Picture 1 (cartoon, rainbow, N blue to C red):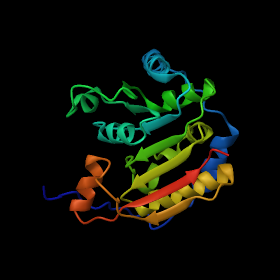
Picture 2: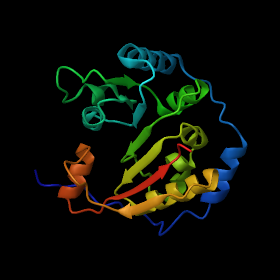
Picture 3: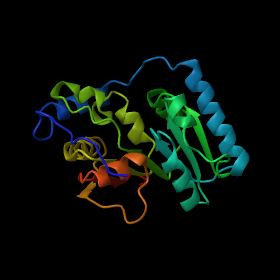
Picture 4: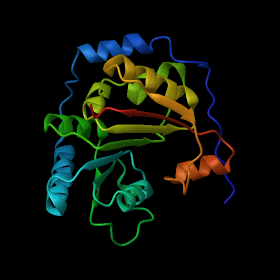
Length: 223
């Protein structure tokens, strides 16, 4: 398949000038939006599947998993871990799957803003956490729609684990790295990369086929 993904266009030429003040403001004021019932039900489903498979198995979260190919590949690779794939779209989650998931994985439809906060409230700590190609919201006025500019970002970081974010917009990766360092003090590795094997997601495959650059941020929050 020939890639036809358009490159990201933005008037923003570097890390957003308001990133630091935005991140610090959100760190000082805990996000208090009420959690919706359907997200509580999704969280309960994920926890039940985890405990039924192997109580206490290390957790991997595939946030915004889309059609879920990344969740399947992660579950097969990390076969002693339990992988939770979360996406807010029931249509995406239903598309293009084998009939059966690996026993160490589950898909749930939920809003990540609520799901992350429910995980934090339950005192859960991840082994690995993947943010694969989130919507970059490239307009200058879109900073607070990006995960690192959203009020929920401190809750995301509180889940710990080896956090890896991939994007086809280098500025997104630079901002996420800066925001993470501001809140945790951890050094975040960023680089341009090429997947060593098969792409993890359809987006990753499409960007590669379109000749676009791929970028990632990786930080170990487990300590």
